[in-house]
Amino acid sequence: MNSQTNNKIILRESLSSSEEINIGDNEELVYIFFTDSEKGSEYFLEFVLTGINSSVKIFGFNIDSKGITSTNIKVIHQNKNTTGYSWIKSVLGGDAKSSIKGMVKIEKTAINANGYFTHNSLLISNLSQVVSTPSLEIETNDVKASHASTTGHLDNDILFYLKCRGIEEQEAKRLVATSFAFEYVAKISDDNLQERIIGILNDRIEKII
Image (cartoon, rainbow, N blue to C red; front, side, top):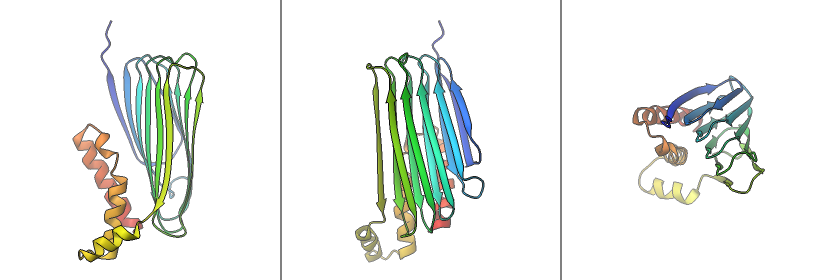
């Protein structure tokens, strides 16, 4: 029996619609997306791990300074030995408002499933707002599943430290925001893809600082 893993990468530089993806036996999907308030306000992403040993790694970036966006991410485990990780970052400035909902559902047939969802937010203005709603739905016992969510503002102590080193305030804010956004990029194994993601992040953050 051939157990070789089939790898696939999907990059959505400007998410504009909903999407549902099934992941079959021994398939691994890396899915990377950037929301864009100018092209859409509500997104539904559903990933169904239908195959044995199937896997999905989701990297999401919600970077904006205006508009209202709502992103719903659902990972459904239907078979044994499935793995689903979601790492979502929000960096919001201006009067941007965002809602991120993340659901990990493990059905009773998904023995030995491993599911994780995390959403970290950085608000760089007083008017920006974020709502984070992670949730789990587990129908069997032999699994690992967890979720996490954090929200913070720019650290004035760090900004003061950088300014004392001769770095102007706008550049200091940019450095803090990019460092925050880059946290999970190292988990992307493709070096060329990493560089491309870093370039997009730099451009997006430059526009909202």
